[in-house]
Length: 54
Image (cartoon, rainbow, N blue to C red; front, side, top):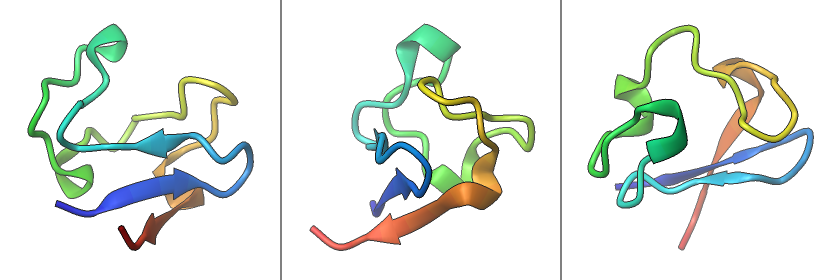
């Protein structure tokens, strides 16, 4: 699964890890995150994330 980086603060969402602090289980693809998902560091929405290559 592809990782996504916040274009504001560079935090990376890794689907293999999920975001347990936000209730996102490991194995959750970025596309399957809720529409109201926000970056845990800076608070921007999914629209401010971009895919990154491994």
